[in-house]
Image 1: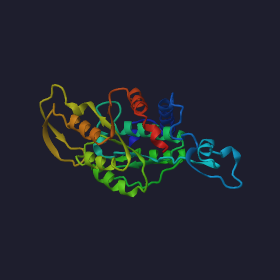
Image 2: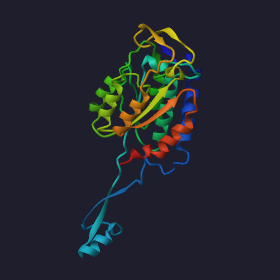
Image 3: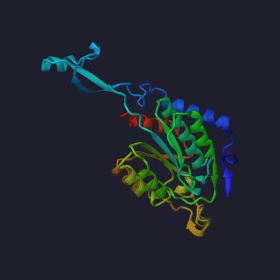
Image 4: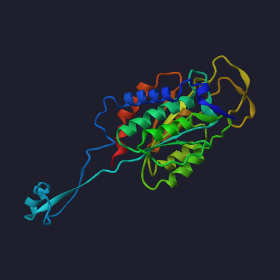
Length: 286
């Protein structure tokens, strides 16, 4: 069953763009060192002087040490592409607050994407569930917005395949990248796949949790339906669905930066502090 995010999030495409741009500006404010762009040129090596080389490029330190003229060579730093992988599974649509996990993830992904573009780092936005989007990172805001708007459509019956998709995604990348995964991590295969991903790429996980997932206060036994399989089951209202301490431990041990966002709390201060304190966005130029 296909649905539109507008059914829960009333913003139209233009309003969504404004919200995303405002978030990007908030994340970028006070970080004007533009880490994705770097210094423009970085020292590479010194080599012997050749006829025609500019005098201003002489490496005077090496020249003084060797007694022969040497020239400094520079190279333009490579801009690390950033991929934003958004979990499009049905569990992401759980919502006991004003905004679903999926709606919040899409908003944050847009803000991060635009913040990356402002630092001249190519961005790719990919739906992780069963939404098949094969993309190449782009520096075009229009292209990024097309991906985001397309992901505002979702299916209520999608099964969680984040673990499988992450496992398939990593080998397809020919060079190192910054990969930001936005998910509730309900798939038990997600964390093992992310640990594998982190062996080759800079990996960041933004996890979303709805208050209902930490237990319903005062509730006893109740009937429920699993969002992704449609299976009915009986559970206790105070059941906690994920072992959060174990998730935190596994991700930290693998060198994965991890932020947990509660859907009923302001997220911008936490998000900004998380990225600035770890200097995550500065990984874009190496």
